[in-house]
Length: 141
Image (tube, rainbow, N blue to C red; front, side):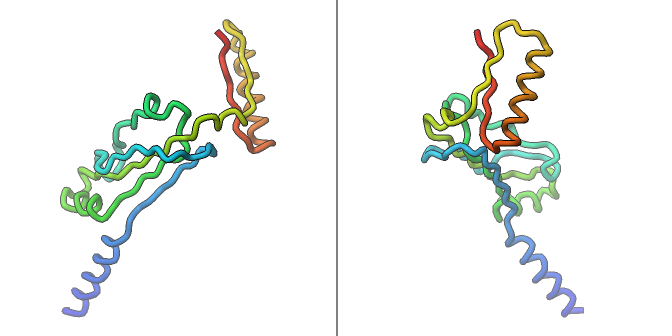
């Protein structure tokens, strides 16, 4: 019986030592400016996600990378609350200024009909898929 308890303790220690980490890259060149939330509140094992990180005013040139991570402390809090409250660490890296100029830009005229808008987004998807590059769709004023 003691061997089983030791194995369970070792297994639990290994599980708690690991960290969950996910990264999303947008393809833009990252800058040195980052935004971080070390205890972004999520609920029920992450089924109810944390609030959206407001980046529009702080990253005027867009976002280059978003990383989410469950640190040891985050996992410990989740374990102690039986998964009801599961905090996570979020880091957003802003994009460098001027990186969007290398993108292909498609412009939709002001007041365009729905068919024209759909066509513009269809063309943007085709260009992005075939050229594997950034395509921006702008609405003219």
